[in-house]
Image (cartoon, rainbow, N blue to C red; front, top):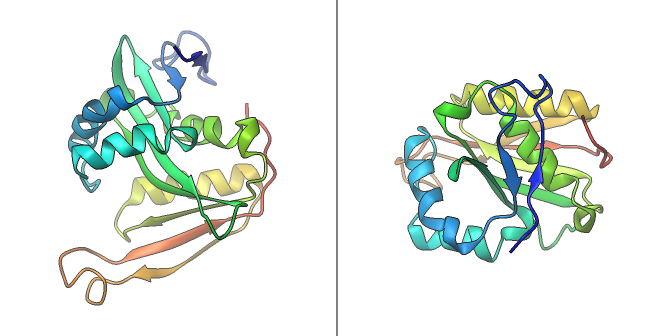
Length: 182
């Protein structure tokens, strides 16, 4: 069994998220992640098999947020193979019951502050132009870290998605130092 890390909300122990435990995911989280993402529109849903891989093969670069035995948040990502100083954040999911208390930022920090990931200096992710919550999250992250944020269209609606999905902008944040934002 893995040791659980409890992160208290910056608002104090009485806050809505003080009883949320952040931990590395396990394969058993895969079906729960699938259900969580389905509730977090406009996130793209993946297959349960993909979610199982996110929770097992990529557990070292993911975090599960649990309250009373229920998955209420999840961040998945990986270290870019050609750039070991870059964390690519694949997806952030926060259930409605856990929104508005900074959980997404705390989950990202929980990953970046792991000793085995101390070489990370950049965070990358892709976001559609209309995903205002994600843009706000990553602008705030860059501001708190004192890091530059650059963005450019990365995958286009017509070329990459054959008209079935909006453009995805690549955000690159960094360089930053790995240190607690508590």
